[in-house]
Length: 283
Ligand SMILES: C[S@@+](CC[C@H](N)C(=O)[O-])C[C@H]1O[C@@H](n2cnc3c(N)ncnc32)[C@H](O)[C@@H]1O
Image 1 (spheres, rainbow, N blue to C red):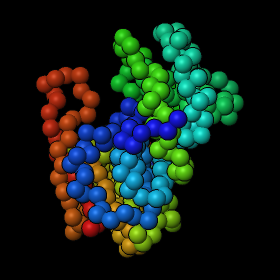
Image 2 (tube, rainbow, N blue to C red):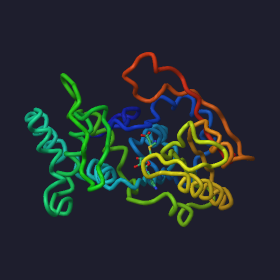
Image 3 (cartoon, protein in one colour):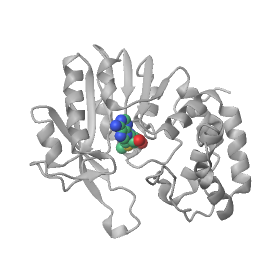
Image 4 (tube, rainbow, N blue to C red):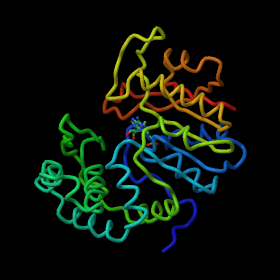
């Protein structure tokens, strides 16, 4: 079954998902079709699915350092029928006990080598739909440790959405990569869109140390170097980040546009509202 154009959209909840910003991004994408499209921090892939629906480019390359996430994309691309069958089983068995059992798969000796790719992918989607806020968080041993969310009827299996995504992913290159490898690959005529973990808003321009997860100041600096290396190689480059002094310092002299985002998932209504973000462009 072929999905109709206009249907493909993210099938995972992901921190920093860009779905809400696409309308503001539309005038910022390059005017011409690039030879190839690279998205090195793919996450839930909101920008990829949007551009793919516009048939924006011929060749797409999606990368991320999260191996479970990359496995999910490959399975959605290559094993959609088996994946849907496995998710139907999770949906039928969903309960707090089943959640804990599935969450603990990664405590088994030999994980993940001992599990089939499709089992790992079904597990990740099931946990993403049922855990607290769709967070993906592992502890120092690599064990997923997010508690069960409070959802009356979580959308464990959304078949039309998964099929549309599978269709959109046909022919797409999907790999576990660090963003630092992109300049070895991208060249003149290519378009690279970066959506890294954001600089914390309280980071200062004198680069006092901070860290957010594993992505700290050294990574933000390395990313700015990669951005400028790709610029020198003749690529179109676009990058999202927080409207923080560190970001303005790293991209001084580049074109910076401000967009308005709704705040990240916040259960307290009084902490919701708009927040500025930046888009850095080399064109
Ligand atoms: C802000 S999210 C991307 C959100 C995505 N644009 C969306 O719409 O859902 C950042 C992603 O970067 C990935 N990441 C973190 N460090 C990385 C690295 N060194 N190289 C590549 N990807 C990395 C994370 O696994 C995460 O999926």
